[in-house]
Image 1 (tube, rainbow, N blue to C red):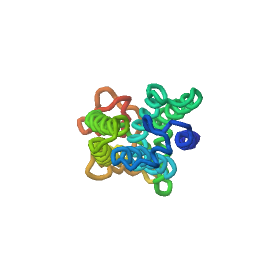
Image 2 (spheres, helix red, strand yellow):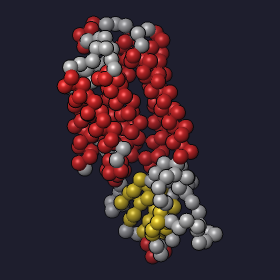
Image 3 (cartoon, rainbow, N blue to C red):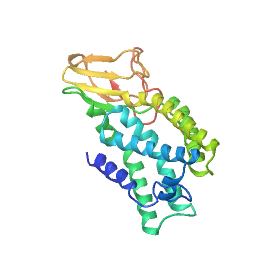
Image 4 (cartoon, helix red, strand yellow):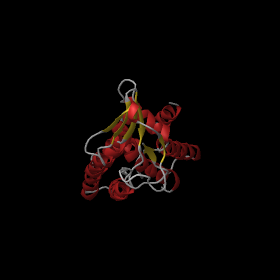
Length: 247
């Protein structure tokens, strides 16, 4: 629970730290006075992404976990750029605060207990849900989509405003939404312990939820290097770490 509140406080702090969520060479007053389509699109893109992440940190749910982990690194990179590289960077204390807040959020939101809080918030009754690690085959194309969405967003935020930057902002938002929809399934892959037994809910690897009654479970532990039975099957999807074996 502490990690969730730490992420919430630091993310909300980004909205009030001077220059953290600003755009290059534009003050807040200039932004309000500007009717430029490209600049307005960049402002909407930046603050909409921030608001989605804020909502995802306040309302705990597997889908909001996917949104937080998908969007917050994009905004963190923008914050670091504005604080460390941009010509119109704010004062030193504001730079340090912005960099620190963004770093804390990125580190915390990747922690296992942060993900567990989101997943468990949607559990029923006495369920105890545990997130499964994502398959490498899914992570690689997802990372490519993320990079393209981030690159389009960077064009919208850091290039001189024009119709092209407005198009880049729209394309970035659409691609980010598309990517989130695809990776949200990763936040719905759980090993579930219930009083009646064990279930594996994995819409990515399984057609239906795999359920075993408690009296049919002989052992739960780390998987053997060489399966002892020809009837065993692997649903990890090739990922890192030591797999768990249910017998």
